[in-house]
Length: 236
Image 1 (spheres, one colour):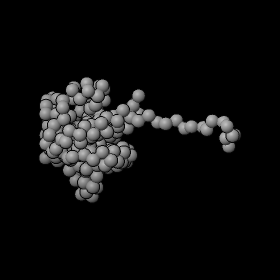
Image 2 (cartoon, helix red, strand yellow):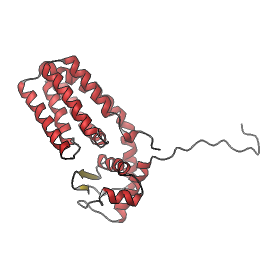
Image 3 (cartoon, rainbow, N blue to C red):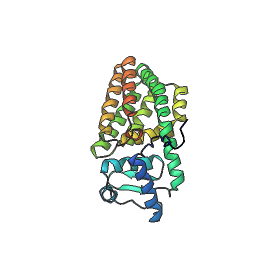
Image 4 (cartoon, rainbow, N blue to C red):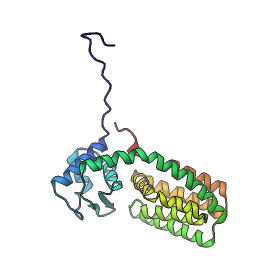
């Protein structure tokens, strides 16, 4: 018990993450400027200069808004508004997403490691063809400066189909939208598209060899890598 006249013991207040503050400012900017669906945000360099932050930090805030369905970011065209945001709803959605992301990664690890092993055992030539097409698509997207989101999605879908397990495929379908959240977030990290492409090729090589244990290990490593998402880390 605190004695009379003695100062009360205070708890340390966690400093808000910088990108979380940026998300709030960007939503407020969209509201004040009355930007509508189809309008574009200023270029990243201009926004970063106005906010006094690095482009890498700004990029994290933009990824958060993309995950929440406020903007669409395409290489070469910048960020386009796809839904008018409400600050309270966006911040609530942002925090809910951050809290469920570990569960999404856990589900992916459980399902996709098994799917990779089954794909190595059951794949057909047609399946290998789909996997290779997905790799080519992602490589093309990354080479053009993009994040490879479409190629990444096609690759994991091709592996799921190659496993020839209708029940596991349905389970993956149930979490598809949440997986897209983690995919956008992960591939928004600097250097991650190239890293993911290398991981995909290692998985594909094991599947092609019929190496179930190797495919499972490669997929497990890949999921571990993509779970290292900067938005979950405290910012200085």
